[in-house]
Length: 143
Image (cartoon, rainbow, N blue to C red; front, side, top):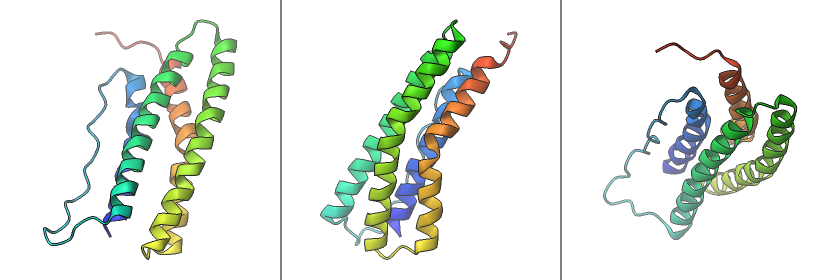
């Protein structure tokens, strides 16, 4: 099912975005396998694809904002800012996870698979924060 590969690509993109924290360039987003030529996207699929792309961009913005917050010298302020950013983006992530679930189940995706996908999507802000904080706390690597 093409939807699931698209949702998986979004999740992979969002979960690997914290690579920015290590000072590395972000890996390009994995692309979903192209659909066979005779299979055209429905308007619903096209709309969902656009939402998924926008979600990926929002997760990149979240990671950048979290990196800036974690890099502050005042660690108390950094923690407070990270708390606020995580809460701010968690609402968006939860809403997107619900949209993924609604769309995928309407397309016939198995409930078990969607439960796992929703859990992974909803965990993105915490995972990003954890990785960014770890990278900010790590000693600089000599070059």
